Length: 233
Length: 233
DNA sequence: CGAGTATTTGAACAACGTCAATCCTGGTGG
DNA sequence: CCACCAGGATTGACGTTGTTCAAATACTCG
Image (cartoon, rainbow over all chains, first blue to last red; front, side, top):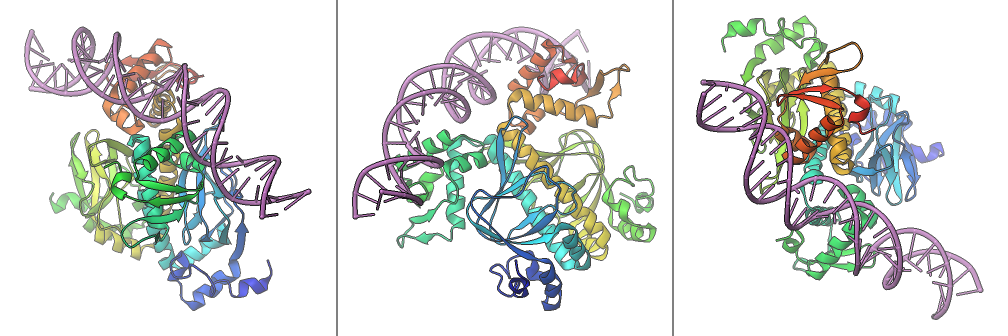
């Protein structure tokens, strides 16, 4: 990517105020500017492979990515989803334990890991923000452990749909409730995130549709017709 | 607890070199000394309740604790285990999302959360160490998500036993293999950590005993007779 | 020794996974 | 613009794993 593109890398950043770097002032930002590189990936591309050397970190600018691991015999689990302004990567580790893969087309701002660690060292405010984000990610991961271990398939799928609806910025179809949006995941990807199979996710969606809790539009479109019915009430 | 006890609070600390405060020099330690208070809990006592205000953090000095959450209708899940020298608590949050409970008798070194945050602010080295620990905890939580969602009961129990054996400092019964130790958890607590029921854990242990992979001594004692058989090989 | 709790064991059941077939859909090329 | 194609989604039948409920047994600690 040409230097020209990076000259304005921060000033035209879509997540300038929400990402980690939002904590920096203009002069600090110039240092990052020289380090960061924009990178685009297409659906299915993997930025980081589990087991590889941890070489980069950065911020997700647009699109959705998944964090995943698998057992030696190929069973796979998504352990987190990443949204715009989320931090990506694993500072202070020689090796990445999780793969990071684009679920749709994505755009990132990438830094060399070592250089980024130096920036953290020089900017305590940013390091504190990263610590706070990491604690939040830990809370989320632990909450998801409860869901994976103890919720039924119906509860997992219902909860997931409501979560996605809330994140979608939900273009409300009407004034009183129905929220319509596109899932950024296939059935198989949802199953991988929820600890289920494609078939079970599909059956749960069919069940919710039959209950008139949701409506489906093609493979990706979803309308939440009745939140209470979605949670199983 | 009397001030006298705290005067030597750090110098006689059992985890002095392994805990977070190991990063501090003597003068820095004096500041912490005035903040920290020793606290003992008995088996079953809860230090922090999920949902309560986040008022304290600290280090676990001895014993084992569990981190847990439950659903509104009472299904419970252990989302982490804490061992000596581990950090306890949730800085930068107003509310604790997880309960912290003693699995046996434990001893802790406790700080008021706000004061501890100030120490972090003043000691960048310590804050960096906490960031590194938090990343490690996040990696562990995510690895456990894979286990909870995708491993069979046999794999969960087997893996757990080997993990505990390694942590136990395993007094080797003989020169070539058998490791004997006491589980710090009941069957029910193991089940809660593994996303199973007491009955399933018990049945898996019985199965491993029948395979001569392990031996059981009373309710808590375990001997690993053949690691490969424990993992299912 | 004995009470109370934890553990083990059994039998029946439910939830979810597996395997296989079919349907849909969104993109492509004629 | 429409027919076709490939991958994703749905549905069905059936098997398996782990849960549930219930009872018996074994520990542990007074």
